[in-house]
Length: 234
Length: 234
DNA sequence: ATTGATAATTTAACACTGTATATTTACATT
DNA sequence: AATGTAAATATACAGTGTTAAATTATCAAT
Image (cartoon, rainbow over all chains, first blue to last red; front, side, top):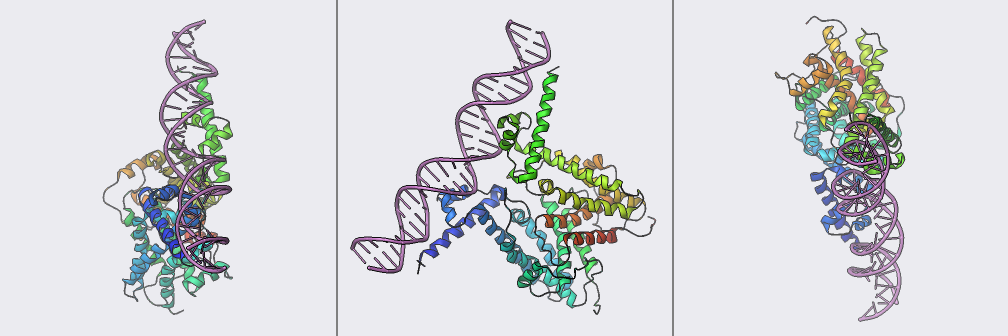
């Protein structure tokens, strides 16, 4: 047996490092993250961090996973405030929650979808469980619509005949859903993400409608594209 | 007259700095950009760069403007290969050109829409002319559709009653177009940008459809949302 | 209780980065 | 030729991520 007592101390500082990282990100932004600054705040030496995270990228990956988890939590919470059978309300609530979370936590959002740090590239496999849980909210709603015969796939992408390994990997996290639901969820995510992304990066000029109005219109257009008002047997 | 001979040398080095920056960005990525590395390549001292660009951010801004210009050129070129009256073909060509350019120049794309460097924030006013020229391609096509009575605004965002200063500023670059066209162009841009953004950041899992198929389906859905098949008098 | 292994942490150093200041070089105008 | 200024440099500062070696603390086994 190799010293089980020490391992509890271990995680204390590990948590403190993450907490301090978030504090810095909230004030100075994700791109300004500095291991040395975190160490200064914790009154430890900078290389001490290397005992808990092999390098800066590993710390960033942990922060990204926490961000995805926060985003997913936020969307799940929004979904749970709805009447379980009201698909339109479910889509509206989670869709709105996506933008609300991004506006409330822009640094977390940039951490996930921007290029947060020089030379950093997120390890897809490590992040996938958290990312899948986040997209899972939307997937579940679309799947519910499909089962209710209310999914209109007339304008959805045409499916390939074979499943990808990625599809199999995701089944593990989002549940065994119909492939069609996943692809529709992707398309919806892309539409909503685009507006939020441009809004947060200040790339979208606001001519007449506010960013909120643009987003709500897009959300309505999404409903109109993919949701039938009445059940259609399949 | 203040030394015309020197000024040619002046701009030579200014151009050389940009060119070397692009070379570095193409190989090591935008986030890894280093003034000192550029200086080393040009066999000049690092502070020499400060005679041409006040700081690193100014250099990045120049690169962003060049990126926007390249994107706009690419879209204009794609548009010009189309029959001028075929609105569907025009939208298809420029829409495809947007993703093609992003895939061909991912670093340029990240420079514009990502968070390229720690603490950098693009100066909106300086970038606007180039950004406006890029979005201008789409705006012109939508405006053409509107004039032809083929724009369906049933699912477009509702317009505010007043123009923003930003709208006035953009008129200068994109021409005096109808406000409705600008807002529809925004919505379309958002939809297409979202998919490209997720594809490039490897955030979009590919279950069944390829990224290209997802994008083409979205492009078709965009046509179906905003374009009428037949002229409707307004 | 002492010993010895090992986990945890620090110090020192390396190779970088952007940037400010002061200084030198080079050249067009006088 | 002398001068003023533009252009480039050398130097230095404060910061970064990271590595290697040295040190301290802690606990299991003796």
